[in-house]
Image 1 (tube, helix red, strand yellow):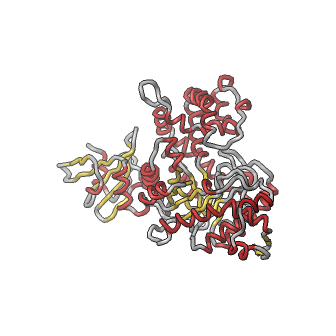
Image 2: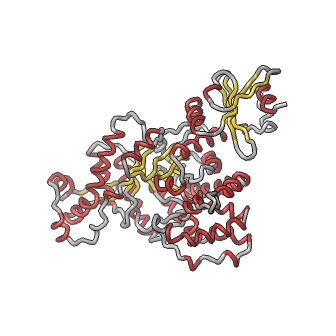
Image 3: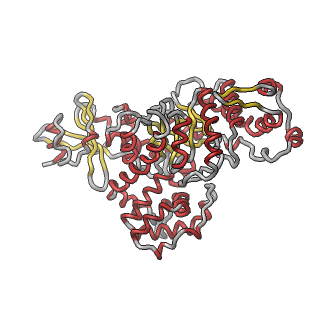
Length: 496
């Protein structure tokens, strides 16, 4: 007897879910339509039965003796669209307007189950679908796949509070259109191509040769003191001219994107302004200028991501002077409050020494963006479950490191990474507690996932996904612990 039919015949009694391979939290119905997810070993599938089940495409299976049938639907894009139409909680919503939010970019499409465990413990809203175009290119994924994986995950795990979808670090109009066309609920505009990085070292005389202050800018800022809670800021002519040269084109570009895609309000999308992808820190004066100019020009934005002092490198703790960071963070957070948006912390992965301060000075209203740390936990799981495979991948990553450095700013010292041939299997996991080893694996993910053998088959990808499927619980618990540590420290800085 087909155990799925046995289960269907007993609905709404779901006590036999486990025996039928049904994920109990995935069982949902609207009237006579019942939809749930089933574990078939190597893959999961959707089962839809009852009136309206034809919205899902797949194999129709009949039971003549019990006069019932169901659709066995693969987890593809077409069925993800149907799922989002049928059950609203599987579609993304704007979440930056909530007090607390965290972007947990999942490069693999399998991390959400661990993430959801974290957000069941805390009231922050997750952005489960979050990828940049760079990450899509390096992993050969699409925004369709990124969003679909998040939708299927929240359905399987019964996470109904709401999640966001972020078109992360987008620079080009066509990429923004791509994300919006799929229903992404957040656009992170990366302004770095319009921010000048050659101005900070100019003398006052060079600045005046380069440009002059527009009359309206001079009237708006010179000889004025701006109170930012218990701090005051004031622009000198030199500082203002420098800021104008660095950021004016970025402001203009942001306004043009706002007016073209978001100003009419039809898309109901959160707008984040990213000015962090630059070599030099964003001073409080610069932050104030950008926020003020955008506000005066009618742009409505939910978050701003400044480039903080020190270094927020990928996958490691903060590098720099924490005293100076705290001093500037206090003003950055106050500027965000003055203009009514949240501060966004980019490359927030593993910045454990800063999290309590961020929680404190934002008064518990923040957006923290993580991404690569989830990939690192996936590779930690590989080191634990399949040490032989990890050793091969580690050596390959070393061979690709110089190419990978073209995409990321890191200060990795390969000489500080232990030779994996000298380590026993248990010691391999400890590599993920060492910064240089973490960054090695962090930035080579694209090469690892796309490397192919001579016959065209993937060298690592298929083996990895098979292992992650079989060791799903190991990975989910690692993420629960690791991302949970981020949230615990962030929450420790403010009154609940």
